[in-house]
Image (cartoon, rainbow, N blue to C red; front, side, top):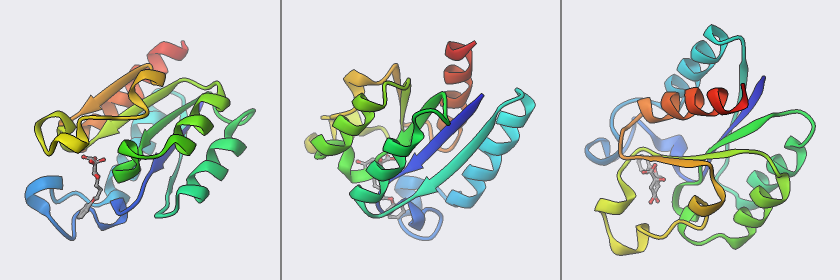
Length: 143
Ligand code: CA2
């Protein structure tokens, strides 16, 4: 089982800025933990962060045939990108959406996700462990 983990714009800043909102854990740590959890379940993850919508879409388009599912925190483009949504839909892969902060408890513009209704589920507001929960749920779904 191979899972693609995608991180959207600005998530490379994790652990460096706004720790009161996004915590102190770096993206490298989150990715390392996901690799551990995947290995414990006989699976593997590839991770990719980009600040560019097109680069994320290119990775999604290339995912077909290699990966069995996608975990994505699209960052700010969660709320804006029809192109990202279209790419995720076209992949026909099961998607789990993750957010570190609770997007329903912040500014009203964050409450709308263009991904949530095409995802099998959304994990929001649980911090870094949310990625692990997403991975476990996705692997369970793929069994
Ligand atoms: O809570 C999340 O995971 C978000 O996807 C994070 C996005 C935000 O636009 C979404 O509404 C919710 C922002 C990512 C920016 O990450 C930073 C991390 C550290 C410092 C500054 C930004």
